[in-house]
Length: 429
Ligand code: EPZ
Image (cartoon, rainbow, N blue to C red):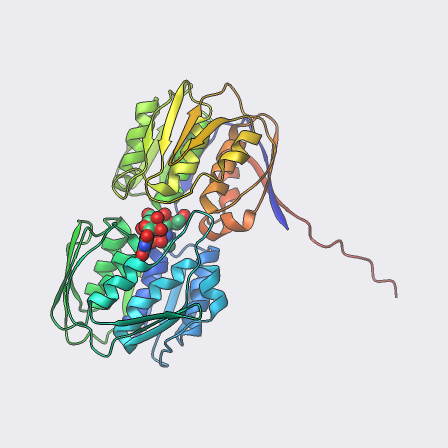
């Protein structure tokens, strides 16, 4: 069992380089199933979710190797299967993002029904309704989802909710469909623009990603050529470190970020009293005084991102005044609250909202991360808490943050990883 030990009270100062985006790279890896030659993906973060997606693709028949520390080579020319092992789908929900590409490439896909997870019930009904609109037959039985589509035909699809995953899967399933597909109320996340660009490099005809209407003109085949693609920086990793700087009253410069992907957080932190300066691929945040309370309303992009809601709650726990956080994307993303309360926070959850009353100090405690971003929230809190915080559940952090403790140590945090490695018993011979 591994844990992080954090001693709070150190201002974060210096530079952090942001890694490639988890929520972009997982989809680009899935999208490579549609290539008929080698795909090279650069700036890939070394995180657990990437390792799981590597295994998923290898189980589907893709030859996946690391060219160097951050470059993946994916070769689908050995032939592709239509189903991935249950345990991998169960371990990572993002595995469902192979459904659209497999439907387009093979005309069928069978996957273990992805469960909900600790942040709420996470069905894939919008994905499946999209596939059906394109002419696919969907059967859900024995805990599996079977989707068959001998012929996919373009359709007009209006999403009940701008689901990121559904937008991505439907886009992938429409690429070789007969006729044109229009996705309305589409998710507008930057990661979706990356997938549009990737598919268009392969010869697809997609327009409108980044807006709420995406048009996919079905083509008869994709170009059989190798492509190289570089992953954009991770806006959620960047936002997490901005909030870590904010809570410690630090002065932090982030390198290799795309500032416009962080505009909602930047505006919110400026409103609370932080000083933020942005340049081409850099962002600098300085906080010289106690932040003021601010209200936060989570919304689909470009609204305030749900993936930063737990982390800003930690920061607002020490702000001057009372803040109201409203979570409008996931059903229950407040599991971190009990752990923050153990550190002295004053938070009351009422339905989709958390009322955060600023307190003068947080104190270190033993806490457990219930999920990836809740874990990040507890690290952020521990960086400012008086005394020592012991965080269990580090495996969650490793799913989405590359070298988190090294990056934080380099800017002054007192944070280190410990493990209950089995004590080497002396072999008495
Ligand atoms: C992606 O998840 C991200 N994951 C999530 O990041 C992120 O929080 C989420 O988008 C929202 O931005 C990846 O990209 C791998 P959704 P996704 O479909 O695609 C409901 C992280 O921490 N819904 O936009 O699964 C769903 O239950 C992770 O990095 C349906 O009801 O998110 C949720 O309440 C966490 N039916 C809401 O929509 C569906 O068919 C948003 O889900 C699909 C979704």
